[in-house]
Length: 588
Ligand SMILES: Nc1ncnc2c1ncn2[C@@H]1O[C@H](COP(=O)(O)OP(=O)(O)OP(=O)(O)O)[C@@H](O)[C@H]1O
Ligand SMILES: [Mg+2]
Image 1 (spheres, rainbow, N blue to C red):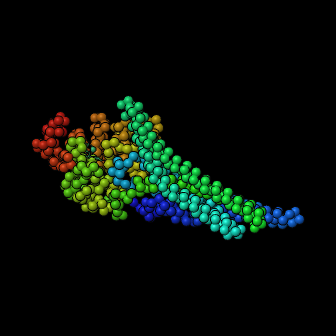
Image 2 (image 1 turned 60 degrees about the vertical axis):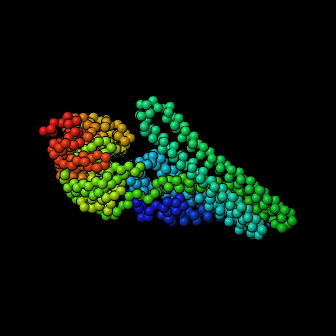
Image 3 (image 1 turned 30 degrees about the vertical axis):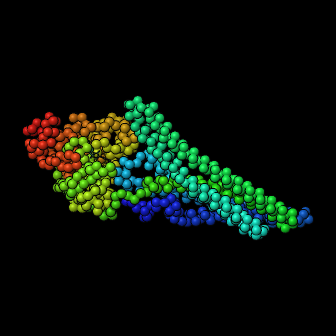
């Protein structure tokens, strides 16, 4: 998978840069939205000025009643224009924000699937999925918060200062001073609270992951009468989360209290001051109405603003946490070069590999498999057989050495083009909760219906598919739970038939079949293997007895290498295994 996004740039890993990226992807939408909101908020301030004109006109007494109508007209017109702006902004905002949140979730998913398999063994699948959804929701609330709760009070504030300057310079300055003090307080509190919000977000994600793990292992829970134990375990996890949530919430409440106190003092002060000025005859009644209306507006607006800021910093925490987990650079580099379909020659040159815990799984391995050779890999459990075949697919990079396919280093070609050359049937084929047809066609998205049906027939799937209530259109349940292990394996084989790749990897591909179906499937496999390079991991030697070559793997090294005939007659682990499985020495 390419680490670059379809839009061309890698994903930023800080929350602000990440959010900004989706603004720059729709610059005209966001710019227009911004102008509409600024326009609407400006009208809202101007309405207060209209009110002042109206009051002053009325204060001139009944004789001058004619003067009342022009300010009245201005007042009404401003209200109409303000609402037109708000509604157009609402219409545009809804389209823009929804589209941006859709894009960003898709980008996150795209980046996520580019991580190597080891990343997915380190993280809960449920937690990862939750993170993408909650980052989408958080981004939506940040964009929405900016548009409806943060920008409007800021415009209000600027407008109010300008208008207050017309009344009295010192009033404008006082308003600026008060708001600066409050803004600083709230910002400092918001910043100090971030760690609490991030902590809450990560605990919540952990509980989500834990829940998914428990629900998907419900069979084990029942089998071991562990409902009570699991409940206690969940209680504990939720307890930790609840504590983090309380800390984050109480912090918000404290910020709210502080804000309310500051602004009540400010609004009361401004009103008292303007009444004193009016008593002195320095300002008109209209000015008093306007000053008090504006002060209360700022009071309300800035409460919204403060809450939105704190909320935004909380949502930023959610996004930052998601980015920290998901938007790490991909551990596997990807190349633009395509692996040209070849014959399927595989070479390992001094390859070593270990998992994250540092235990060596493959040690200094040399191997040359000519195109078209059929190689069986046997050896005790944990010997590194699955690891070896996963390295051919480049599910992770080797620690040292090189793996060549058709003389190209697997790291020098794109992962997609590499994997197009390899069909894999794993021990437990993972199925999507989609129809049987879709699951088989996954091997080759452009396959015709006939090709899919042929593949199913070749893998001996038809008989059981016919018995299913809706045949090929039956949904198989999560990860294929509605099918038996052997049925799943046959679907895995059908996929491989359809994929038609030069290299075929079978990791215990027939282990879940009964002997009768195995014989049948084995015949189908013989067909499938013709003309391909095959790497087949097997515990049952009967499956590899007719192969060209056998590798015996022990603790990450090849201890025996030769044709089945040779190895059977040579003293060593293969002979021991052969005898243990009750196979005759002379023939298969
Ligand atoms: N994701 C992983 N993380 C850490 N260690 C792993 C991981 N997968 C496998 N291992 C370790 O690597 C070693 C080789 O495992 P591998 O799965 O390749 O064995 P195998 O030969 O396929 O065994 P089996 O026949 O049981 O399938 C084992 O010691 C195993 O514990
Ligand atoms: Mg294995």
